[in-house]
Length: 411
Picture 1 (tube, rainbow, N blue to C red):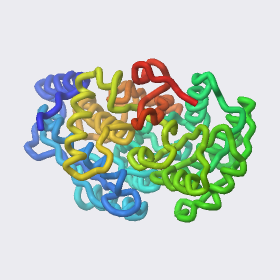
Picture 2 (picture 1 turned 180 degrees about the vertical axis):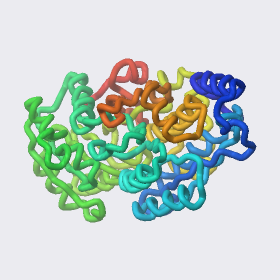
Picture 3 (picture 1 turned 45 degrees about the horizontal axis):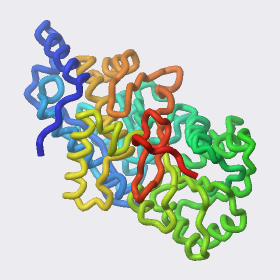
């Protein structure tokens, strides 16, 4: 596999670091030892199918950066361990990696629960903590956490409205809407806003647009019997169905709806497994949110096009059922970019210096410019785009400047 070029930012930062070392800078560049990045992923457990995307992405990034000279002139190794999709297990791994294995750096795991647990360890030990998929934005007050999940601090307001703007852009917005929401904390945040807050979320924002909320159902994460929920959806018969979905929630609900002869007229799924949803009954026209997909205009950038190609080849080799590079891979790659930029920018492995550099400097990433704002708990606005299944493929349809050429939202 041909190695990727370092991003333009990393090339410049590498030059700066070499100049700094020549002028008597940090001793970090004088060591022959590899820089070790510690972390965990859900290599087993219920999060494993999506975590596999993050493992492939991380491996590709490490290969890429080492092909370009590593960090501070040293090769990079990734010590990644299996947290089994269990937050307490993730916390124990990060504690051990930092205090016993003496890793140089860390990168967050996959999933809100494990990230939240690991972040507490990072804060206690004073480690910079880039992470990519945590959704409880309001809860993260650690000054040196750096998120790349591109949803902004008030994701409960911004994310639904990006979706609703796409529905308006279709020229045929709904007049009635139904909500079926997983009780997972992140999707509950989207639906209702932070606990003990009057901010609201997707449901109240729909009402502000004058849409009639005709259904509001919350279901446990471990739901296996979808028939009762399907019956409630069919009875309410909304113009548009908003599903706070994780993983295969969407395909499960669509299968149950199909079993009773009902197909939603319009439907949205918050964080679905993209491949299974493509194969579900009546999935054509389904919406979701993303930040990058494997088509133009994103792939007009040669660097992104090469990442897309290399990821597809690696995912196929690993037997992943869906091999297209999309939001999960993109935010994972961006987290690695943030970590690398902080190290090269600071010219050091000192965590306080890395943290200060990342707070003070924007980072150009695969998902766009990330400019961490301490006043917003290091969030930087919602960079989400809206995608839709059209012709059996996921394509970005909103906003227009990010959409596949010629694609528009369809209702």
